[in-house]
Amino acid sequence: RTALLCHEYLHKKFAPSCFDLSKRIEHDPLPMALKTAGIKYEREVLESLEAAGIRVTQIHDFLADSRKMEETQKALAMPDIDAIYGSLFVSETRISKPDLLVLIGLDEFGNRQWRPVDIKSHSAFKENKSNVLTVTDLPGISPENGTQVSGTLVEKDAYQLAHYVRHMQELGLCD
Image 1: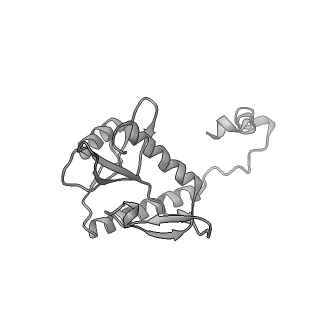
Image 2 (image 1 turned 135 degrees about the vertical axis):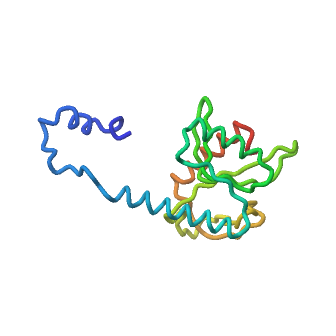
Image 3 (image 1 turned 90 degrees about the horizontal axis):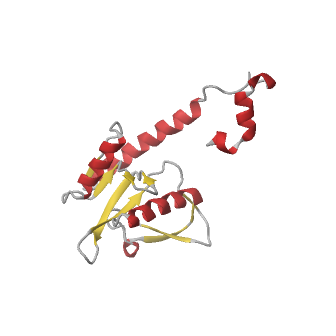
């Protein structure tokens, strides 16, 4: 993505003799540390869900994407689970990998309805006196079961969830 957006980067990469690149950071430990912290936090969230009695099935990250899609389809039909961790959806227009899918009930036709959750190890919303968010505990994800708090969603997190919801709506998994 950087190469597509930054022409200077492209020029420096493909014409390095014109630039002093000796001070460029080759191995930055920070991104790996952040990724490791996020993975650890996701594990802790899963453990707390299971401790709360939420029945979670996991689709393993080491599987090939085609297998992840198959496992996601199987898990969506499993009657004895409340949540799916590590799902993958691919359609002609979108790819979605929500961290968690939570079963919220059935639609008027009896089809199971899901909501995507993106687990964040950073503060997912900032305090803001002019906006109100609804926070719910699982499995009661409905806003009627929630508590209202002041806050503002981080915009990129909201876009990510909106992408997942729209994709799931296209697939008939979310109303």
